Length: 402
Image (cartoon, rainbow, N blue to C red; front, side):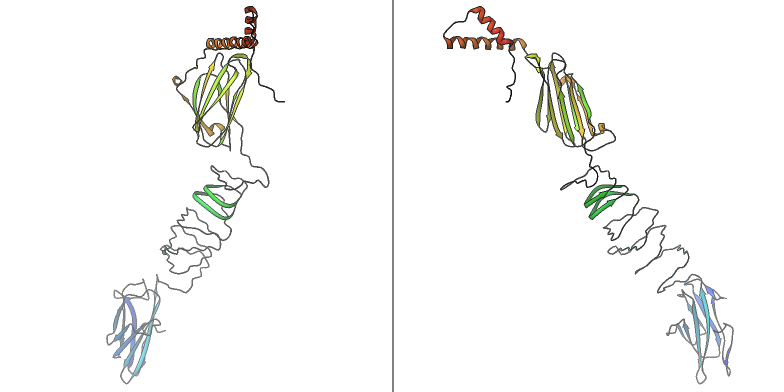
């Protein structure tokens, strides 16, 4: 390569110099794309200027200068001077671009390399390790493929708008999914996964907490047990005339119990699912010497509201309502809600004992009169009075099953 000021002599035919300048200042290092002036001095009469390895001349003519503005990489300029009958002479000069635009077939970075501007890959780009502090954008929205054979480490959030297929193993310490997750195979979870909805062919989890678990076929505990029912909670206990509304916040079972102490008579009306269930007892209404306890056991579904109303007569029997939720919560009380209904909507039932006793006396007297007519005999009045009193003292008892 010739120096820009060397002279090539051929019997009086020469090229005195070849230099590159910007704004009249000669140099050998420039910024990419700036206008460059290539000038020369020669006794030749016709010139051709070549840039790099191009076979087509970038300038051709009789002038001794040429201006170029599209040089973006290191380039060697070669000047060809000719004189008819004297042959040709050549001289070259090389310039260096401080910020070149490169189009390599491949790039191998052996140490840390920082790209301060945008890095665009129109075709495939393979990285052994890629750290992205800003955004990683895929210009082809129809095929934004990203294949990672090693690890993907990110210090920021990753938003995936379309389907994501993982063929191998993905190890995630903490995964929160706000939408649905579908697993065609088995889902193995050793730590904790928060999923709004999980649809999986198989679920293997060392410790999984779910707010809603739907099982289409069966739930089997191969090793260990499945705990569903927890310790019950007393929702209500008392005997006052009252009406309350309870709303279940999970599936569970309701157990209502009416004991036999103290003696009295009470009715609880449970209004649920459009039906009314009545729990009557404590003691027989007509005779407080006969105990008559009672229980009611009902399954309740999540979100179901129901009301219960208590009426009592004489003493105040104690009703007990226990709630057994399915599943666990921070507190059993969190699995239901209870509110009072204004007490002016409840009225104590009025039992007419005198009328009841009169009806029993009338029934006993009619029974003895039927006996007189059947036997065609009259029972003496004193004997008849004694028999009536005996009949009134009789109480009902269930027939034993043999």
